[in-house]
Image 1 (spheres, rainbow, N blue to C red):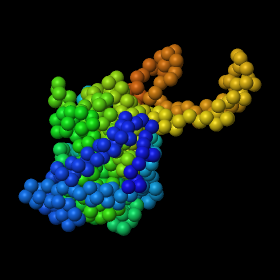
Image 2 (cartoon, rainbow, N blue to C red):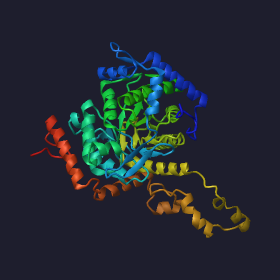
Image 3 (cartoon, helix red, strand yellow):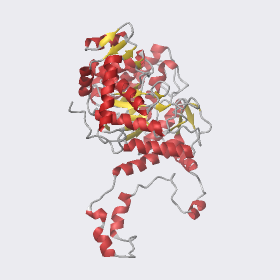
Image 4 (tube, rainbow, N blue to C red):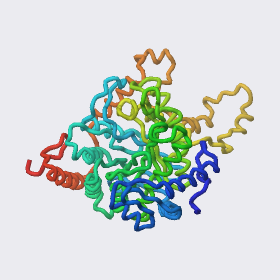
Length: 497
């Protein structure tokens, strides 16, 4: 297939071309001879009708090689996401690279992260408002699971809050079969209808297999519904090396490949051309403690390797990194978040989810979002590379200036110093000790907290027009009525209340 090649491989390459080809062929072997379980008779019937060999009793589908290759060929090479007022915002293709906050944390932490608590709606509102102002985090996410709303609307209410407080595109996901359609209706109400939503998507839906080699009823239907509604679907395969996947990096990447391609096949069988993102959230199982470290270097290596597979298939890629397993915003948090962010970027991954998260993806932190935004800014500068033009190389300048020259007031310096250097925000201190002491000797966490307070003290900008907001409220009221819900923490009130 023409789209399967190595030209688009990233700067950091862990797998060789022959490694990639071997993993690809091995994944096809698994899909054709072992198969994948789909806990949905509807999905199995659709797959059987499209050429899969289906064992309905076992719930297992086996895919002929050609069926998988045709599905890959049917995927768009990229996805463009839009703001809620219809402007192109983020491209996910080629070497485009963007950050999103980590999503679906259960807790929210303040300050140094020590006092994490169950997240509520107001926490998500504050996260969304902050991310809306962070220049290096281009996407929103439904960052936390809020505990103060009925479970039946827990997924869609997160999306409601994001849409109310920001018009950046959002990475989200449904907790039920019905929830995805409700969320699609909310998005369509905001952008002006189903057709506009399909043409200019504003959200990506995460869908996760249950490793190894299985899709639940909810995940299966979420894939099919995303395809039917032309919504971008992001596959989040989560091999846990040594627990529900082989204990090796290569074996985990192979399982990730087979699981992800099985999702790609289902999406393309339901509707050819469904936009897909080759994502994941793998982890290396920590045998000593029974934990799932996202900050281990082996986890990051799996990330980079499966991204190489996604590049091989010509698909936009995603991963969870730039996060930490530390329970505090301490040196471990800085080391793991920075290392993951840099390796993911050099690995050519199009979307990195993770900023703001700590403690094994269970906590979201406003403070860490501000700090991570600076890491993101530095990584963007790294990816910008080095200008080696004649002017930047400055050969003539160095020769003419000679030994002992002063460059500080040279016009060449005035021309280049701002464009060559990433200038961080106030949380990164580059003053000398004397001036640092004179300004209160504050640390990074204190300064990040001040930055958060400044953003939240300002009036929130209107992310939706009055008509968009009214249409969204109307859809949510209908959902509330369906579930017998009279009120939600940040609105809307039920009709007639």
